[in-house]
Length: 279
Length: 126
Ligand SMILES: Nc1nc2c(ncn2[C@@H]2O[C@H](COP(=O)(O)OP(=O)(O)O)[C@@H](O)[C@H]2O)c(=O)[nH]1
Ligand SMILES: [Mg+2]
Ligand SMILES: [Zn+2]
Ligand SMILES: [Zn+2]
Ligand SMILES: [Zn+2]
Image 1 (cartoon, chains in turn yellow, purple):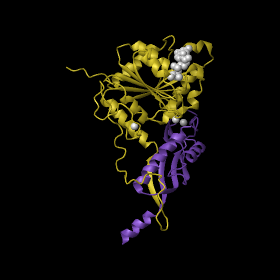
Image 2: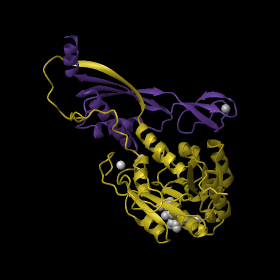
Image 3: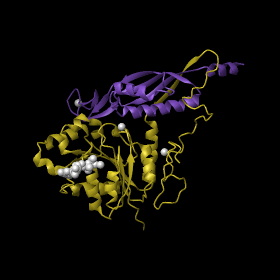
Image 4: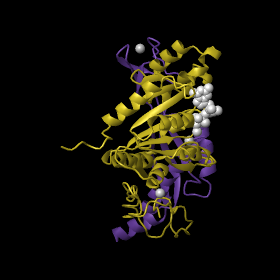
C-alpha cells in the first residue's frame, strides 16, 4: 500500500517481483521523514491547555508544488536509469491525442515497445482503444481533477511492464491550463493543437505552448475545408516558443507521419532509451 | 479550476508543518504568487475557503504577495516587464520572451498560535 495516499495501489509492493520488466520502486517512500508522529494529527481539535496564547511566525519559503516536483524528479530519475522514453501529451479535449497514439502504435508495429497511461476524468474508453491494439495501457480517472500529477503517474507506471527502450506515452487530461504546471517526470512534452481550434490558441494559452518540446498541428487533412491561417499559426507558435519544433500531421491520411516518427525515434535514441549495444 | 488542487497541496504542507511544529491553529498564511504563475487569485481565495473548512487552515487569513512578471526578450536582449496573458515584449512587441520572474507560487510563512509554545518555553526557563 502506498504510504503517500494510503490508497492500496497495486504494483507498488516493495521488492515485488510479480512483474516482468523493471519494477517501479516505491517512488515516494521518504515523504514522512522528519515529520513528527506523536499522534497530534493535523487539524485535530485538541483542547488547548490553559494559559495565554502565543503567536509565532514560521518561515517556510517552499514551492507549493514542491511535493509534486519531488515525485516528478524521482520518476524522471527512475525512467532515465531504466532507459524508458516518456512523452507527456497535452492538448485541449478532442485534439486527437488518442487517435494519434493509435496510428503511431500501428505504424511502429513491433519495432518499438510501447506503453500508455491514459488520463481522463471518467471512463476507460481511451485505455480500451489502446489495449485493442495489443499495447498495455493503464487508465487514470481523475474525477473532478483537471490534470495528472506525478504521484498518479508513479502508481500507474508501477502497473506497467516497462523494459529498456520502451516508449511510454502519458495522455494528459484535455485541458490547456493546469497540466502545464504539473511536471510528471516526462522526458519531453508534446502539445497537440488541432487546426479546428483556431490559430490564436498559442497566444491565448502561452504557458503550455512555451514549454512544449514539440507542437503537433493535428488534423491537417481538414485544412482545405477551413480558413485556418497556417502561416500565422506557425509564426505565433515560434513567437511564444522560439526553441520548440512544430510538425503538421493528420492521423486520418498519415500526412506528416514520417516527420513525427523520425522525431520520436531520434529523441528516443538521444534519451538513451535503446539498450546499449555491447561489444 | 486547478486552484483547488493547488490549495490541497498547500493544505498538505500546512498539515505537515502543524504536526512537525505541534501547533493548533494558523492565524495567517503568507503566499508569494507571481503574475505569470497561471494562478487566478479570486479562484485561489474561493478554493481556500472551500477546501480549508474543518482543517488547520480554517481560521487563517490568506495574505498574498504578488510578484511582477519579467522576461528576457530575445530580440531586445534585455529584461522587460510582462503580464498575462499575451506577454509580448512591451518594447519591441515580439513574443520571444523567456520568463525570468513572476512564476513563483510559494508558501513564505505561517503565523501560528498555540499555548503549548509558551508552556514549553516556561518549562525551559525553569
Ligand atoms: N479529420 C480528422 N479527424 C481526427 C484526426 N485525429 C482525430 N480526429 C477526430 O477527432 C476526434 C477526437 O479525437 P481523439 O483522438 O479522441 O481526441 P483526444 O480527446 O485528444 O484524445 C475524433 O472524432 C477523431 O476521429 C485527424 O487527423 N483528422
Ligand atoms: Mg483521448
Ligand atoms: Zn501513492
Ligand atoms: Zn488541474
Ligand atoms: Zn523586445
